[in-house]
Image 1 (spheres, rainbow, N blue to C red):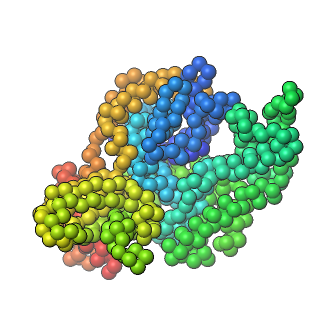
Image 2: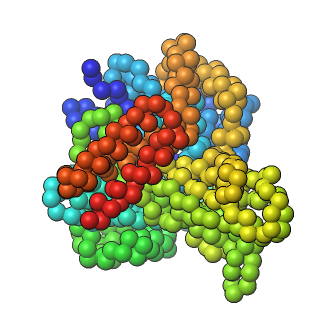
Image 3: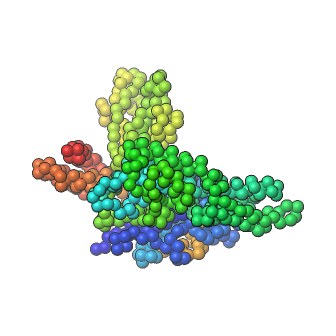
Amino acid sequence: MAEETIIGIDLGTTNSEVAVIRDGRPVVLPGEDGDPILPSVVGLDPQGNLLVGKAARNQYVLAPERTIRSIKRKMGEETTVALGDQKYTPQEISAIILRTLKRRAELALGHPVSKAVITVPAFFNDGQRQATRQAGELAGLEVVRIINEPTAAVLTYDPHPTEMEQLLVYDLGGGTFDVSLAQVENGVVEIRASHGDTQLGGDDFDQLLMDYICDEFREENGVDLRAAPASKARVLRAAEDAKKRLSSEPVTWVEEEFIAEKDGRPLNLKMELHRHDFEELIRPLLLKTLTCLDQALSDGKVQAQQISKVVLVGGATRTPLIHKLLEERLGRPVHSEIEPDLAVAMGASVQGGLIAGIDLGPILVDITPHTLGIEALGELYGFMSEHHFSPIIERNTPLPASRTEIYSTVHDNQDGADIRIFQGENPDTRYNTLVGEFKVEGLAEVPAGNQILVRFDLDLSGILKVTATERATGLAKHVVIDSATERFRKRQRSDAVDRLDAVMSTAAEAGSLALPAPGSGGAEEAGAESVDPELRTALEAAEAMRTKAERVLPSANDEDAEELRAMLEDLSTAVNAGSAERIRATLRELEDLVFYLEDA
Ligand code: AMP
């Protein structure tokens, strides 16, 4: 039987794409207009019909109030955006984009698809990842894995069969920036370090250029084009077009007729732009990216001269100044053999193919880009403080990762403990991000020093489960850090699916959007609720461990190999029994042996 199709989706701030594996190679699927790039823009036309993609982007100039762009920047926030007379969560808007891509894949493949790998910036925190997963579910997709964008890009790269290589992935899209170090050896890709900025991208270049144009125009005409939404949107669009032209030409013009009025007289915009001036505008932002690069090199303990290849990802990397600065910093030429806009979707489909069991070559070892830990009483700035950040999983730890730390109560007869979970690198929790909190209550009435075990399980999608257990009694409480999911219980979800069905029934995107057949929503939702999150985490950990174990098996001596095989068999029994607890117990034993064999 043919393998199940798992589509790969790059859900970008500016553009999105969908790819599948065809004849063993990743292929990005075009829409009906032949373009594989779907602008991540959703809007309503004057009649209230839904527009997705280019049609929505094109009307942004005329109707910014009826058009939503860059929704990815709001993912994970507890907010809504207005579209017509309705309000939507960022997940719902993203779901409209995802449904459009799902439909595109279904039309190209000629059969329904229900599973996807979706990429996110390496720097997305847990809430942002959860929101992405929910968007997938609302779109009728089971999100089998969320992977980091730079990681996906590496998966499209054909590594040297035997030599170890250090790759640098420099990913600058419309809204986010990531730089990652990947080590590739014997077909195994290991992301050694990642750094980035979730609020930096090519859109910022557009803003800077728009401000430059508007300032010059105001100087000359005494009118600020940013004052009216429609003229502002026109200049922004013209700025983006000019920016792209400046990637291949040293000089360009922006021309917009009747852009404003003064004393009843129409004003035209006509301005010459030089690449050199544009480069000076964006240079400070690019220098910020180089600081991130230095940080990633230092985290990954890699020297610039050890990098054997620079993989450029994201449309904004077509900017010549980026090539120049990177070449100066790394002392080697940079080039992108794969279209920088398409690499991430292609890599996501490679990951989907690997999960579906297609033999495609590289295996992936991903890392966590943040340190995760809890707030505890401890030393801070030389004093005892309740804001001490106690790391449990350190930044750049390979996923999946499970770690436990022991903490103690500070008061006699303390019957509860607040577990406040943070991510970040600062020893003071007030400078890190609170990602979740819960309380363990009903602790034994004993003197101070009652031990609480805090366990962090971070799965392959970067989703965290935290369990706190009172050591003496086994009293346990856990939380899955999905603050967004908490807000979004099942009923709300099915309401949201209904709302999306309704709004999408007016879909009028020129090209790629069509409604799922009536009734197909049921099957899609069933897919979305299948495995409970605890079991899913355990199954993913089991899959990763099996891969690791099989890798060390050939080099183990007979006795160790036999023990390893027996344990793998136990693991397979536990997986078949569908018991998260048994899987974890077997994994703990396996972990020790594999660790020992890896070191041997
Ligand atoms: P992505 O998120 O990868 O689709 O990248 C989108 C960003 O790349 C947007 O800010 C685009 O304006 C920018 N971009 C696309 N083509 C070019 C180009 N030729 N030169 C500079 N920036 C570009």
